[in-house]
Structures are given as structure tokens and as C-alpha cells.
Length: 225
Image (cartoon, rainbow, N blue to C red; front, side):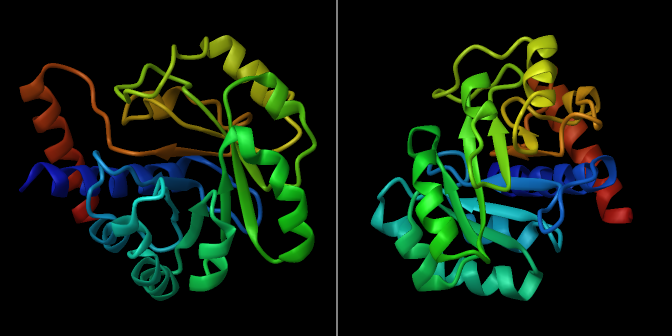
């Protein structure tokens, strides 16, 4: 199995584990997969592997090749009952009839206009601290990151576990954990505080050989369910 295929299967397994662990808000899945040009170079393959009812956030970063995939992702989302959100691009979300928009923290204020214009959309926003979480934004959930240590080049220092629970408990919106979520750290998330989890790739812990063995085991376990 290629490294990309393992990543997508690992994310799908994490989605199933999240669905078993969390009780998400009405209209939202327990798990969102976020695309990344480097770590998930084939979003279509990822979408096809996600369990029915999962969430998918297309982050195209203005790259034409990724933007062009939006119609195909929207078709797969309708077929598999995925909630497709387009990151920071309501125009593209309208064009492909996506389920809504995910807003970067700096753009979260734009949600108010689109909540009025598209009241049936589901919208989420990134949050990296308590200030955004406390804002009464017209979004259905916030993605708090990084909750755990992450391999992502763009991730900052992980939020202290005690602080992350405190911030999530005081949040004006339901909170999903993002950053460093894997098969072990998922079990550390307080299901009474967090509404779900997000991931870009299925990070596992241990030495390289152990990582491969653990992910292979997880994939086999999920395939047998």
C-alpha cells in the first residue's frame, strides 16, 4: 500500500473512531478531514475513503489544480453523504453547491454576512486561542488547534491539555480538536468538552516501523468491522 493510500485509510479509520467516541452537534459529523496540498495530494481519493457522514474541508489555498477538484468532491459528498466545506471561498462553495464554508481565524468575521445570505449552510472557523472561542460567531463549530504536538510545518506549540479543556468548556461554539490527533491522543480528548475531532493525516506514534505496524493493524481492524 502506498504512503498516500495509508494516509487516507488511516484518516478514514480515525473518522470511524471519532464517530464512536463523540456526540457532535445536530447537523455536524463527529470528524472532519482537512485537505493539504502536501500531505493529502489527492483529495478525491481521500473523499472516496471517508466513511459516510464524515466531514471534508477543501483547503485549496488559491491553487487552480485544487480548486478544479471542487465539483468532483461535491459529487462524491452528495453520493456518500459527506459534509463538504470549502475553506475561505464562499463563491466556490456556491458554485459547486457545497454544504458550507470553513473560515480561517482571521476571516471568521465574514461568517455573519454569509449566515444571513445562506442560512442553510454549515460553517466552521479555526481558533488558536480563547479570544476566538469566546466570540459569538454565527458558526456551528470552531476547530481549536494545535491541541497536541503536530508534525505540520504551520502548527505552533501545542496548547496545554488543561488549558485546551478550559478554553473549550468556555467556548461560545462547539469545539473540535485539531492538531496531533491520532489513535492514542483521540482517547485523551474529553468527550464532555469536545464535540469531535479533525485531522489532515493519520499521525501515529512510535518509531517508523512501529508506526507502519500500528496503522496497518488499525486499517485491518476497521476493514473487519
